[in-house]
Amino acid sequence: MFYGEYLHTLDDKNRFILPARFREVAEKHNIRSFFLTRGLDRCLFLFPDVEWRRQESAFKALPLTSSTARRFNRIYFSGAVEIELTRQGRILIPAYLKEFAGIDREIVVIGVSSRIEIWSKENWDRFYSEAIGDFESIAEQLIQG
Image 1: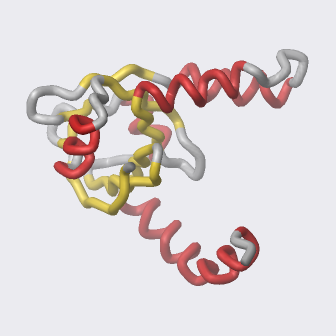
Image 2: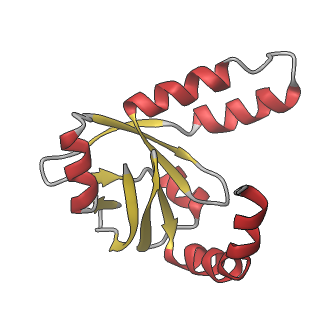
C-alpha cells in the first residue's frame, strides 16, 4: 500500500507534508486518520486507522502477567497520537516523538507496506548504510524457495 522513500524538511511548527503518493493511497482507501507512535530502531511509525486497530488488538492480547508485554505496551501506546491530515496533507510531529526519533529538521519518510516510517535523515542514512550490505543474506534467511 505505502512504498517509496522521500526526503522532507519540517517547518517551524514541526510539520511536514505527507508525500503525494501516500496522500493518493489514503484517498483511494478512504483513510481519514492515522496514528503516530514510537517505532523500532529509533524511527516513528505512522499507521492508517484500520492497521492501527489491528496492531492494537494483537498487542492487547499479550498476557498482562508478562512484564515484557507490559513494558512494551506502555512505551508503545503512551507515545501514540491520532493524526488527521490537514487540507494541505500536513502532519504535526509532537515534540516528545521528535526527541525520541532524534529528529531535527530533515526527515526521511518511507513506505513499509501497511505502515509509514519517519526517520531523522541522520538515523536513516546510518541504518541504511549498515543494513544494505546484509540485504541479500537477510533475504536468504527470510525467504524460502
